[in-house]
Length: 510
Image (cartoon, rainbow, N blue to C red; front, side):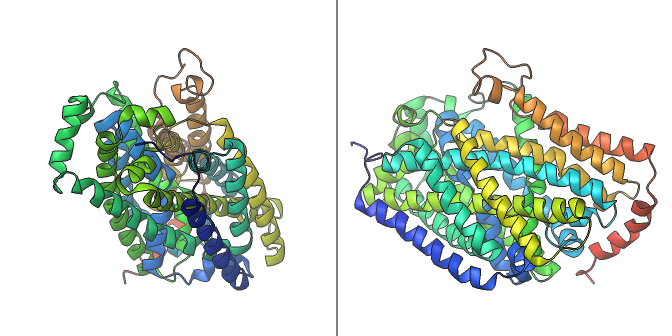
């Protein structure tokens, strides 16, 4: 069968345009309701637990989940499961350790929770910088996925594809804020589940609806190598480091933490995590079937010939099982996935700069809602342009491997400081700042020195740091540095405020 990927047809174009029109309608509707900073950053706190759960799932199920996980299974088989298991294991931590305290302590960003104990200026400076670094690394994965998708579906230049995605994303964040972003996420999550379910049913119908027969066929065609460990990570410490990054990094992603301020009460925050975990778990089961289905029905070499990172596996599987109409539908849904996640990331970055840096550090006090919105919107444009540039720089990389870097930074920079703030009485402002600064700079430095950048991007023969993910070193080190610096310093405000933080954390249980 000759693939139509790269040869645009009227059906695919119509579906893409339909989604852009739908997004535009949502943005127009949301813009009329988005007049204040509270509405721009948190949708006025009027999102229900179920709606926020779908939006959280939409934020988390990104291009790396749909395109990257499927492609990674095609390229590496069993080893890819470390990404799936690690990502899913982070959600119970969010539910039991973070969701309710953040909702009770903050306003727009997780930094608000930290400054209930710590000095405002150093904390806002450190946390906003770490948030921006995380957001930028996460954006790279979405933009690489977007450029690959648009280039292959429509046969247009990768650079033009990046500009198109960046322009559309900037548009509906700029005007619709959190309300528009939330509803685009909800619609995208539902469509993605429907599209994945269709693919799974079509794949399993080829094997009498028995997954074991599918796995057996993989063994027949490729041998047992793809059904056992050792294809992606020969070093077991590499696999452990990636798993740790996804597990703890989930709790530190700024755009996920920001969502707990869109609901009205702590109960809704807890329920939103429960709904999100359920949706994500179901989706990951679908991804496993889709990945092995693409191995058998499409073929590893065919996929590699079109994209060395394997990111087109789900699209080719859709074409093989459902023809051009299903390919067009899956491509449009994937496009919506990328746009929605990039919008959430951009909004989180705008909050970090306008709310944390501009208001808390530069202006050092209350500013008008109009001024804060203006700064947020200028930031949105800047982040959109930056995301296009980075998407071009990292063209051709597997998006799941790239997103693991963002999780490693989040787990190193945000998670330790947040957990120590909420659960350790002796933690100080200096300890929190040291933890965040080391977590950010240390993980970025090791990533630059790793094979992901030195070998895959700069094409060096070897890398100085041998592991692709630094999380196994940087997350424990960030905790240790935060604890040591706290023990060496005194912070009366942090000590006195601990009881207040604890009392707010249990509100909602009483």
